[in-house]
Image (tube, rainbow, N blue to C red; front, side, top):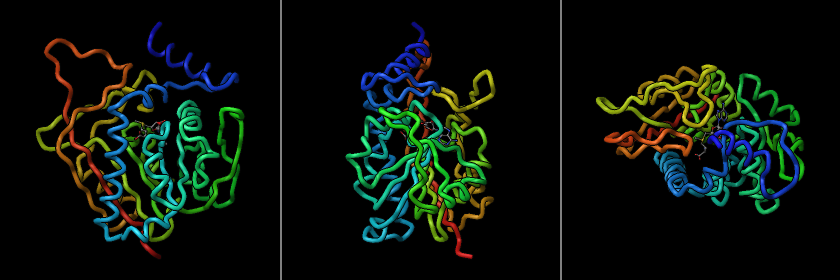
Length: 277
Ligand SMILES: C[S@@+](CC[C@H](N)C(=O)[O-])C[C@H]1O[C@@H](n2cnc3c(N)ncnc32)[C@H](O)[C@@H]1O
């Protein structure tokens, strides 16, 4: 059985319940949850976020009261770290299968400060959240459940390892900034590119989309992301880059050829603030 069919059958037949899901996609949350490298990266991503907002001058007693938006949560491996730290977390993703795994990994009844929805960011996101338009928020028992967002605007939006999978980056950024309170922060963790380092060239699928495992945009230089933030009106923009570490390879990626080594790239962490009008 090919990897894609294995993934799809695990999505159409999740072990926890008997419903069939009408929407399929290539994101296999199960693979994420079983991968120790992903779990380690999730802890690092959480640490990057806390360092970034701390270096921006926010004290712990302040950020503990924040209501945050997690964009592209996947099955919730970073969410799990965010929940005990922040007042509330609303997580969004565009993948129904990732959200199906999220709801079993982080059962909504166990985390009263947690909510989530299937949502594609766009310039209309601010209106949809403010007018409390119902959004799909599937549970294992009720894959068609709909709930409005619990709030219109957020103190912080975090985006971990998502931007390289986003097809419409400008629309995505407009949506993310539109959901921030004035004075709220956006923190993005991404694959970084340094002089002479691996570029990790664009790898779209046959339809030209980057939104699937093993498909991605090229890694960003710090200046590229700083420019992107500033072009969306964010201020106090700052980028940090870590040391190189091996790029994560999904199980669906082709095995490395003989003599081929895993690519090494830094993490790039960029923050910016929505100014007060
Ligand atoms: C590499 S996973 C990262 C998951 C999680 N943030 C983590 O760090 O483990 C990328 C996720 O981004 C989601 N994604 C892709 N395009 C998106 C978009 N435009 N808006 C929100 N999520 C998106 C995918 O469905 C997938 O769950």
